[in-house]
Image 1 (cartoon, rainbow, N blue to C red):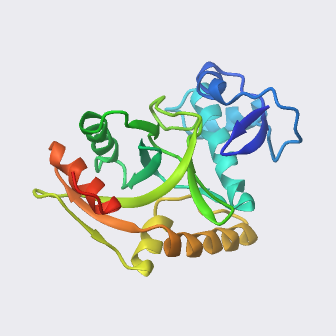
Image 2 (cartoon, rainbow, N blue to C red):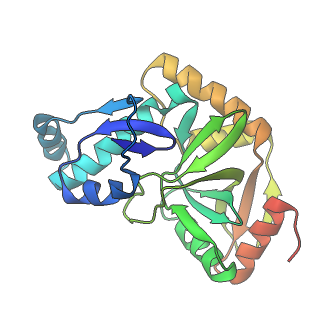
Length: 233
């Protein structure tokens, strides 16, 4: 049994990548599973035939994560395609299309702020618990193994844009909703999609969302930190 994002997940990874990534999430607790995932050999082979550039190991890792994130709205949660950095026990998420530089930006945080760490470098889970939003590490962190089995309060979300000068601005709720929908998994089932939209409605009212224009200087981390916390360095 695994405990991921505060949920008990019954899954049986068979290939080294997923086994290695999931090891930190193993639990000895005796509990009924919230989520059960089984991927047959036939299923994985079919996915590999459809995606010949992937190994069978890659397919297990990708589709286990996909199945996990598909059902998260049932538990007041969803994934955000982003790099999640933690500093002083608060989570800051930086979201952007692939290649925009979200991981590069969070690496700048690690250089600038002593004690900061990456919670998940690609697909952290966000969950509403007791009317507060928390961000969680998960085993599914894209092409890297940068993930930690931990949970912290979610302080803010930034949508990254490249820019010559560093500046940050708060975005309106409707723009925030559109940006988040573009970087999450939209469930296939209509009922789950409705639940996701309900969660997102709560999120944009409780968690500030920003637009960040940044370069690769240390100042970029300072600007985003100060803008999201209201603190001065």
